[in-house]
Length: 165
Image 1 (cartoon, rainbow, N blue to C red):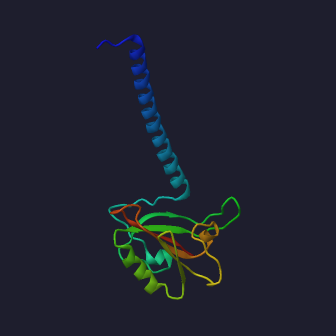
Image 2 (cartoon, rainbow, N blue to C red; image 1 turned 30 degrees about the vertical axis):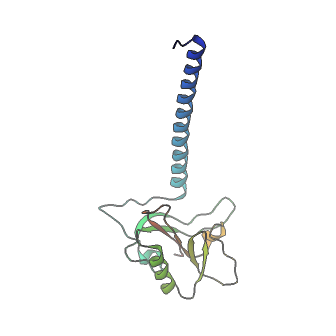
Image 3 (cartoon, rainbow, N blue to C red; image 1 turned 90 degrees about the horizontal axis):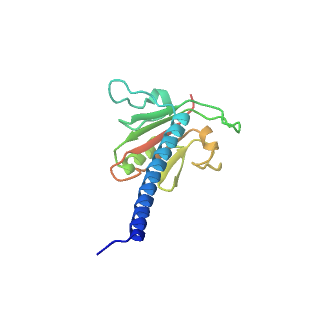
């Protein structure tokens, strides 16, 4: 079978298009990850862990801490662009089952309100008649504990403390 010039040009163009599309996907993936990392770094100050795993301190958050909860990151209190005053945040992680972590906080945070949102369990301090949304800006100024399920099987559970100093 003989390949004519038109077929060669079509094959070359198809190969060029495929390589270009793959290169764009790789570049966009890298840019998205880079922007996501920059956003995380600008919002959450990572605490360096010297000499091994650092645990979340009950003394620092002033709330019950799940046993063995590893420190993942933290952020200081701040004032947002809209004037909202936030409380400090500490995020810990564990590989224990979510049910076990939730049961711990149900027992320890008696008198706190609780709710569920898309698989996340949360507890907050305040009037039970007050509306609380774990995804609002206002939630950053209300003492709370949020337990997020793992993103995928085998991943860690994230426990976020928004606490009063």
